[in-house]
Amino acid sequence: FGVEGAIAAVFLARLNVPLPEAKESHLAWEDLTVAAISAAGAGGYRIYGPVLRKDEIWQRFLIAGAKTASLHVLRVEHFQPRYGEDITQKTLPQETALPQALHFQKGCYLGQEIVERIRPRGLVSRMLSGLIFDAEGAPEPGTKVIAGDAKAGEITSSHGHHAIAMLRVQNIKPGTALTAAGHRAVTGPISGAKGTRRAEATTPARTSRPAT
Image (cartoon, rainbow, N blue to C red; front, side, top):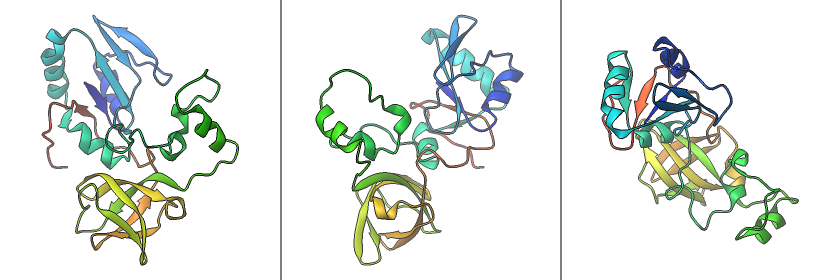
């Protein structure tokens, strides 16, 4: 599981958990491993170790003040795309808005020709973007996104007032006004939303989240 949020480092430090500094680096903690990996885009750490210790560590964090949260909720709120939902086999790497995940100097790989053809031109027709909806909330995935009278893209993930969508590049500038199913929204950058103000313990199997 993980601890995500703007104060995740402060929270773990209070529990004397060693914190790796570099992204994706790791340190030993007791018989566990702490890795600087954020699964939700909120900034945070993943905890790896024997499954028999999971409940013990989980309870220790909750007693210390962490709040449970769904990984899906956190990642959508922070515009963190997920493979299988926002990213599919039909998605070009440059369309994901995740350049830090790309390594153009690696050897041969499936799809290399089209990826290398796009790289020097820097041109794609669509890209993932975050959406922040008004009081009506975000429609379900698959809903068409509209700019004026034209189709701008489609929602790929949603929760509450936040969504991730694949949009035409002319519509991804942060603050662009769009609609989906009649609901008004503005765009936001992928993985760029402000982090949460509390530490939250996340796991795909636990979906409860207390009100803020």
